[in-house]
Length: 373
Image (cartoon, rainbow, N blue to C red; front, top):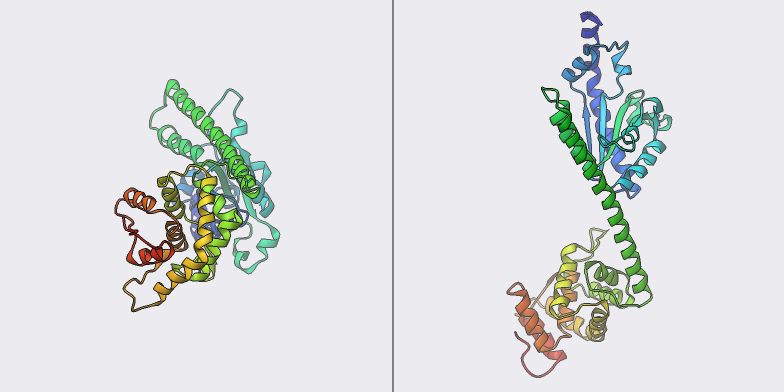
């Protein structure tokens, strides 16, 4: 390729590059939407368009003769989808094939190029472009005919590839064979870790399914942990009824529904209740269920009394709870013995103490004696 041809191709790329950048941004948003709609979890989606310098270097490489680099080079626009797990790669690959035209001749699964006794770079590479239906939409019309490279890999594969590229591919010397072997051993360890994460995830899913089935069957002989507590709170009818009553009472200023959006449970909320039950010596969901039976018995009387103190702006015992969980926590406290309340106060070590308002409601439910820690 002579200098005149090179200059012409560079000028054409410079003119086309803003459209490619817009395509890259649009494509990243589209793929994010497709994955989220399909419920596929991923770490991140990276995107880039080759720089003019990189384009120039590539078309001038020795042994390369591009007739039309803008068409011949299929990686001028590149996206990289980084996943948590190996299994997500297959699902993402299906989604890409369903929504894009794939250049099969230039697409490759790098891992399949390795022999059974080899370890090294692994990633699925698709050369893709918008399909006919999407190209006809006004927002995508300008991107017709532009190809992009879409890479899909796990976070561990990405870490290895990034380090390998920095230390080996861009090395100023020929890296000795023993050091390359060392890199490949690291690749083997990461490949094993990826597989182990997959097995671990499957076991967690199976354990969650087991918990769900047991709670559904009112079999509460489960160890108390965050997962079992979460499933109990979300699936047990008794717990659901109490939570509904707390919601209706409007004891918390942050409802489970905010601006029309249904919120899920947050980790901190589970931790508050888990810390409470653990401090009280509970170790199974059956023990938690017994506490909810007591809570259900007092809820109809306690909630109006608590709500009265919220709605009375002149009361010195006025109170408000940040979330439904905090209100539920107080309901549970109202079922405890004075010794249990004292133990709870010690465990929370200053981060929680029975307020005057809650103490007043406690006395209504348990006349006689002091409830203060």
